[in-house]
Image 1 (cartoon, helix red, strand yellow):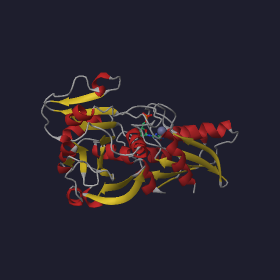
Image 2: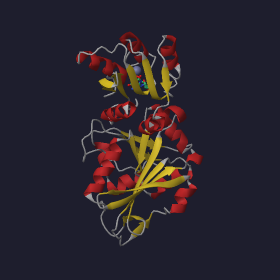
Image 3: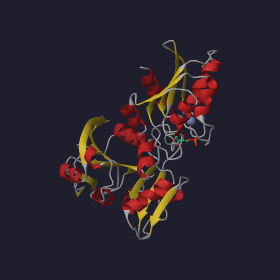
Image 4: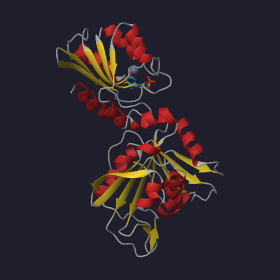
Length: 334
Ligand code: AOF
Ligand code: ZN
């Protein structure tokens, strides 16, 4: 119950903390929550430190309380001083942790420092839920590449575009808003040059409130991008990946070095298939519209293509007027 509370308040930092994870913390005394804290934005207080401040502000002493925190407290001087020290200084008597911190600069040390300081710790309460909430951060720490999310919209026959008409959206406004929410949750959005030259997309977050915009990445090996494309001339940041590629995996490592933890591939079939064939896709949102294209361009995406790429159907949603299939990397091919 207390860890559930900590996971819930961690959500308040969504879209503002990357490349840090979402973290929540509650202080409990005599079975009652006396204070709460969460990592609110990059450079802001860590969850534990905010909770300690909150206790003081409310006139409660954190001394003798139990801290429930969704991530192992840090033990390093980063953008803030170590949380381990703050917890010890506050006199917390026990620390219950959902998930260890896989960050190489803090790994293992947080718990050890607390134990050495005489504060017992217990790790693993609601671990799976915490992992899910910090999925992109965990993936980036472990593999040093971003989590790759693909989104593709198809007509009733599996076509991505209609050559018979000017480039235009064929999904509902409600669906577009969900796509913008997805973009907001990603650090970068990637397309191929063909998509830029045909659709002239902005690839930013406009339909829902956003604290920051994703980095836009265009794969353009032969430098064919239209120089007046919106994402070239507008104010947002765009990374043009020009020249020969030695492999998509090296592209992802380059992006990971720029602290991109989750990337949304919104490209056309060529780009999406490149990622699928390289086995680099972690999840797919397949948006099914009831529209029928007159001169279709087949996406070439079948349940088999996705299974072959190591993905399994996990859930179905409704986004606006469209049905959406959510595929996730099968546990065996992680
Ligand atoms: C915590 N509590 O609320 C968070 C933690 O450079 P900094 O100070 O922003 O530290 C970033 C690292 O600290 C981050 O990569 C992760 O390992 C950990 N995040 N730790 O004790 C928190 N957000
Ligand atoms: Zn910390």
